[in-house]
Structure formats: C-alpha cells, structure tokens
Image (cartoon, helix red, strand yellow):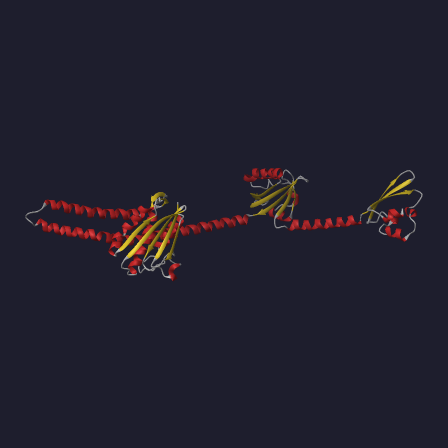
Length: 446
C-alpha cells in the first residue's frame, strides 16, 4: 500500500474492508499523512480539493478518490476567460449576434440591441430576415443559406429597419458554426459611410461640372485666340491677291481706253482673276474647316494635316523668309486614329509659336523642321526651330494656362495643345531646348 501511495495518481481506487475505517488501513506514518493532507477524510463531503465516490460491495467498500484541485483551477480560468470574452462581446463597436439556422436570434450583444432598438427578449421573437427592409428579405434569406452551405459570407449589404422604423444601411458578415449548428453574425452600421460617399460623389460631380465648364471656357478662349490669329493670317493671305486684283482692275480701265483692244489678253486676265478668287475661296474653306469641332475619332493622315496647318500661315512664313521642312522616315504609315481638326490645331499652335520665336529673335534664315518617325507602336513628331529656345525660368510653365511671353498672347494655345494630345488622343507632348531653338516632341499611339 505504501508503494501505491508513493506513486499516487490523479485518481486512485482503494478496496477497504467494511469493518475498518478508511484511516485504519494506513499506518500512522507522517509520509502517508502528507499524502493525504489535501484530503480532509473526516469531512469528505465538504472538501473542495478532491472528489470521493464510494461503491458498496458485499464485505467491501471501494473508494474512488480523484484529485480535482487542478481541474478547479482550470475551471476558474475558463470562467475568467468567459467573463473576458463576454465583456469584449458586449463592448464591441459592432453588433454581434448568434442566430439559429433559420436566422432567428438566440443572442445579441448590447451594441446590436441599441442599434436595432430591441431588447434581448424582443429580438428572440425576430430574425435577421424580419428586421430587413422588404426589398432585402429574399437576399437576406439567401445569405443565411449561403453561410450554412459555404461556411461564411462577408460584407453582405442591406437595409435594416429598427424598432422605431428608422432605416439603417448595414454591412454584415456571417460565419456558420457547424458543431453548434449556429450562425455568428457581425453587423456594422454604414449609414454615415454611405451618406459620406453620397456627399463626396455630389462634391465630385460639382467639381467635375465646374472643371468641365472651366475647360469649355478655355476651349472657347483658345478658339477665339486662334481665330484672332487666323484673321491676321487671312489678312496676310488675302493681301497679295487683293492687291493683284486692284492692279488688274486698274489695268483693265487703261486697256479699255485703247482703240486696238486685244481680246485674247482679256482671257488671260480673266484666268488670273479666277485663280486669285479661287485661292481666296480656298483660304476661307481652310479656316472654316479649322474651326469645325470633331466629335468622333477617325483615321486621318498625319502629313496631310501638317500641310493643312502650314498652308494657313504660309504667306506669313514666306514674308519672314522662314522655311518649313518635313522629314519622313522610309516606309512609314502616316495614318492614325484621332481627332484630325484638333491635331491640326496643335500643329498650327506649335508652328505659329516657332514662327513668332524666329521673328522675335530676328533670325534672318528661319527654319522649322518637322521629323516624323516610328518608334515601336507609336508615331513620334519632332518640331524644331532656330528661334533661340525657351528661357530656363519659363520652361516649367510653358504648358500652364494663361502663361505667355507674347505681348498680345492669350497663354491658351500650348495648354490646349497638351490637353488635346494627352487627354483626347492619349499621347504625350513635351518640350526641351536644343542648340539654337526649341524642340517639341509629340508621341501618338498607333
């Protein structure tokens, strides 16, 4: 028996003769007494540190002794953890509830009760489906079924109705506990988030509208500025043919006074007059086309539009002895998808600026060189001039709206050119100085 006591396990079984007391079977030995110091044998029904169960047999009583002190500690720990979890559960900043497989409420934390304005007893008569706005009843039922089938469902959004009839925008996540056949549901009130998003959306719409209106104003200003420059160009374009027509009219008056009038000469004069009138008419058509807005992207020829832009200010270029040279890489396909008129406006702005830079720098032999190259899946245009370049302090502002170095400039042309190339045609427009002038580079995707 001493050997048994020396190796006393968590549970021991002792077989004791009925005629003897349980203590009589052990010698009064201190080591044995120490073994049982935690067992108050005389008051076994009150001791909390052990559990003794007896079984009566014929002449024997079997005692089952099990030490429970360590299990008691574990139980105390579990109770403590439960209390902690309960506190977390009730103090959580989200509604947490337990549902049965039909969506009926079994339990809900304080936050959820306050949010929905129901007591726990009242919630037990409701379900997550009955608290939904009618249009979300079916989807709520489906969400419960899906949580059971798939194990969980996250961020399911719906509108809930509180006890007082208030509508709440809610985001819910459901997780199915298979062992308990219950569903844990976490509910977040996102009404303020939705209101904030709606307000933000309205602010964005207002800002977009404001920017659109501002953009349209700048487009109009750009067109008006370009129109002013075009009228100036028309004056240059028409000056020579009008002077020519005046000389012809004066010549006709002189010829008509002669006795021997050469009628064949009249035909030559008529042909020259019609040529000048046709030129003037073509000029009007060119300017009319220039100001026509293109609403849809179409395939157009880069070279044709560059030549059209040059022709609009060709007379001015010749007046100031400025040469324009176009250099094209071999076997280059010049068709591209975009807005032809807007591209023509960009080319006119850049070429006109180059012309003005050459005039202001008093360059006697002005040159504007346009290089058209192909790089991988894009076309690159480089417009170079020998007008002295852009001042370093102005380089970072060159594409800013209303920035200009001209006495009567609007500061809209290059800004709109960048908008057209980068926003409307998904390309890029950049500028840098080279040896004796500026170099604008346009890249357009195929």
